[in-house]
Length: 431
Image (cartoon, rainbow, N blue to C red; front, top):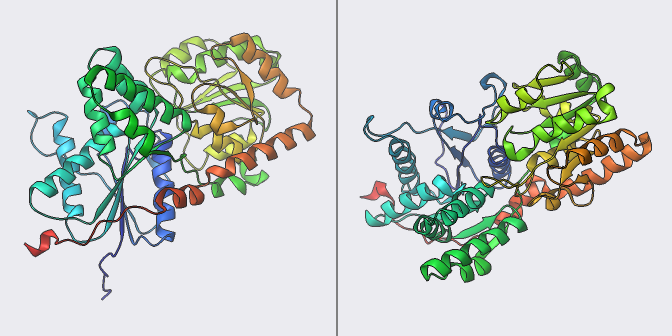
């Protein structure tokens, strides 16, 4: 009989995990994988039940194409607590209740939340419950503020005059032991929003944001992009009826802010429309609108079932990759994880905009156009296809070197360096 040794060090990540189409779901996976090699012997991703994700209408990857996690990583999806009279709160109580159990079993734990709403709130509620129950814990908390936390929730609250909700969110964020933002742009946006809340409420969040919030770029697993073979790429393209360098690729969540509608118009206006297909890979709330924009054009291909293993192959095989993101009231691209993944994968050049945190993701390695500039997109596509093989190779090498700074190992080590520690305290099992 195999004896199971008790865990000595745990990492818990609270996130909208797979199958959600979201760069931060991938980031959580990458941090979890590195944690195993960095001495954590119990790594858990605490997320939502899949039926709840489906009911929310989130864009999801095909369930049968998900890459399994390594042994040692446990994905927990706590069931809701309560009946139909407590709608959303049932799931939140399920999450905070499970965290309470993990926080009070005596195992030293680092708990990281991605998305302040609701994940940092759930962690804060679990920590409050532990304290109010008179139980200690050995927990260090990290809260990562991502783009929609600020561009959607906080700034939306400010615009609507609901500053109390914004102030509550800042209180939750700053209650964490370590506060990070996914880019310098995001940190600046957080600070700007904090100043607006301070002005309205008489609080002092801005000074604390400037002092405590650090930048931790999203962690990307470079290893799955660096050793692609021609045989792998060509086989993947054949299955999709595509040819190497025969298509322009958009691969991301299909939302209004991602600019797929602009790309359809720009591609149609380019000379490339006569020679290259346009592939829109992904799902999301704007998919129906983009399909309508592309109606009747057989050279525009929609792929809604691309899995994690196929993604780098499609990126490598494209003639150019375009993510013409644009600022919208509900969302601004605060980094651009998909851009980094494409840069690692090689293949044709990246075409994008200088929106939000994208310049930090791509450096000076991309072809840039102004947001919503459809004629500019057409010109950029034609410029990308006019590059010589040597120019393409040099551009791809330079892009890959830049993207390597976001490799998950270096990001993990920077994020977890010198974490504050919590003294040993009694666990729930001792009461």
